[in-house]
Length: 230
Length: 266
Image (tube, rainbow over all chains, first blue to last red):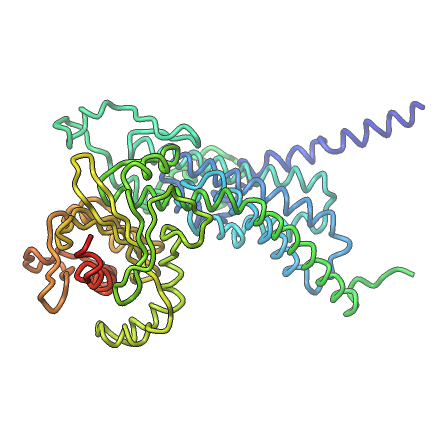
């Protein structure tokens, strides 16, 4: 009786053991997919003009990441080695198509703004990287945590960049289903005879790169683990 | 006996099973969401058509406002003869409704290659498309101050992909009341600017040169414009040319209709 409980707790603990917790926390900082591994940069630069797009994109990646990692992990002993990359690609592609279809049906305006970048989740190196490096060799539980960790690591950068860009570029914040909330009265804008002008540079893609660069800079100056020798 | 998961037979079986499962899942998703997606696409189309006559609408009220302003939907053929017309409420599922004519699909499947071969020669284009059985939708609208407007959808090619738009003509069939353009993949900051209001505003009040060689011209940046032309987008030359081409090609079809007797009798 007692051994059974112990085994049950041991099993339960193992999912949230220190090692497994690191699966969740590491990608947020020490091995962040965007700022440290510099993967998935393409979409991070392209769709961070507005917060609402970044939110939807992050949720899409979260879904595909979890789905892909768990499915590949479940099938890891069945997938023939020679076609494993193709199998991973098919799984990821199917999940992405499902996400794309759902967005078209329920969030048509945001789907239009995200345009090709939903489809490009298929080629997002973060996802293929985690499937190949982690899910193929680990059980579904840890793979699930690893997926959440990496997707959140991707998401927080996206959200941070888009908040900076939208606040300084459009003077507003937007959330899915709520539209854009403007901070400043429209009479303050130069076009209405005021004194304020939006910084158009923030809207343009180069500013996303610069913002990501600044995040990397701050992160590297604070995180001991990322200090490089010499 | 354990199955050798690296044997050729197993690899084939695995692939086949995977394709069947994935195919079923995707087909199911696509089918169950299709109605919603079609409704969204129809709303978007209504918003765009209303945008060309300067009426703002959003997804929640698009079909109501559309019904209020668009009084008649007409389908014409390549020679400008009226094929059908309806005043009933829009039913996006009704394939015979002029609203359902998919001009983008027609452009992709036949008009694009024919237009390229004809290179602006309208007679050659007509001959090439004579057997295609194409129909063209026309939306007759009435504004708040009782002005008759005609909205014409146009489709063409930009630099990287398709561009499209809606032109609203006034009752004289030659004055442009408004225009709205959009694109799929034009270069941001250059060709993509065709969707911005600074560009579409230029079309307002311009005229179609019914007698001239070209109905309307989008000129290369900086050239002097007259009442039959607008200034194109600097750095977006090929996209501007695409706007020029799709306007001339499509409006000629509608001009035949406007000049025909069916129209004059109405």
